[in-house]
Length: 340
Ligand SMILES: C[S@@+](CC[C@H](N)C(=O)[O-])C[C@H]1O[C@@H](n2cnc3c(N)ncnc32)[C@H](O)[C@@H]1O
Image 1 (cartoon, rainbow, N blue to C red):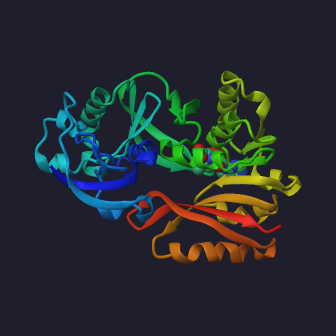
Image 2 (tube, protein in one colour; image 1 turned 180 degrees about the vertical axis):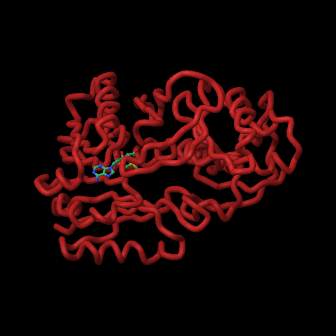
Image 3 (cartoon, protein in one colour; image 1 turned 120 degrees about the vertical axis):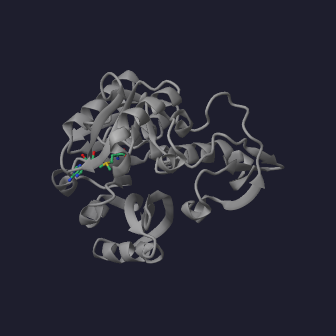
């Protein structure tokens, strides 16, 4: 079957496959194609949805996957084609909880969608309608549409099991690659701040790496920090991370500078950027996430560096699209380095 595919070096195949699954972009009904030293991963997304930084998008004649049973959850619904076309292609899987957003015209059919997802996703226990995150603590409003049990679950990423409660604390399964990237960038002896840590995926991944001299993870949501504490205890990593319940406004002014600071607060982080940059030691790096409109992306790194001019001299060491956020914007990662 002719379909778009993403060309990646074989060595990065598994990593990119995971990113595509997290973004809901991998077509499960088609087989990955091997071409010498590269792999071509079949895409469920249209080429324009795939950030250019992920690799070249090509067309290939893919073999259909021999997987038994339906390859899409929509195939489990006895609906007419027009109604099926209104179904979202992607959904999130957090541990054994499945989350989906539905357009208004499908809300009265939510129970059927929930049952289809419960049958479709291996190991699924509970399906929630995702009404989005709100408030400064970015708590998600979820409504049970199929299955049973609590919203609390354990989510596996990068070989770690994180304690998550999809209703009480923010967590996104689409950031696994970012958590690993940040941890990979921590050098032996670095001191680390995970600001706005949520349930602590950055901090836990760094702790597992074992190179950091200290890790302090800060969040205003006490329930998020409690989930982090539980994960650290279960993984015997409690001695490596200091969890702190505090608002940035309280923590940052007296925080001594460290070599690595990550802040994932994409909508409001800009308010805190200058004060947070003061916690970056000379030669250290700040990893900052922001939702940026596509038309602004090319200029945004320079704007950020200029804004930090009041704090010190910074340069953009890396900037890249993490995943699409809306039809006109992306979640973007900026890595800015402070000069020595
Ligand atoms: C988008 S979530 C990021 C969570 C985590 N870093 C991750 O990647 O999964 C933002 C987090 O910032 C926290 N937060 C929001 N405003 C804050 C503030 N002023 N001070 C401290 N934490 C804050 C929220 O409670 C929430 O857990």
